[in-house]
Image (cartoon, rainbow, N blue to C red; front, top):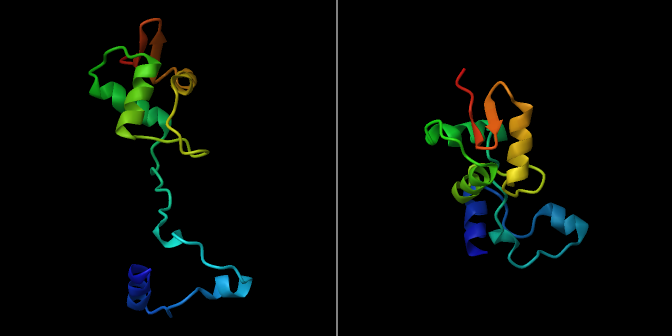
Length: 114
């Protein structure tokens, strides 16, 4: 709370509860000042991130589950709807939407080179 008060003083705001919370009559929730907001992942789309992972593997065939695991481990992309990392089934579905960009077979998925 002391840090928040210092930040508010620095920004020129009046210390104490916000006018909105006073008007609503809502007490401040303990720990509310330390909660972090979700950080957006930018403009990268899932198929762009899949292409990036495949490029980094030098044209090798990768299974959708391997791509999904790497995206999750490196925290490259999250679903906007719930913030979860994509599953292999979502990778497969997205790859099928971009046949000009990806090749898909029993071997896995790779970037189209043609």
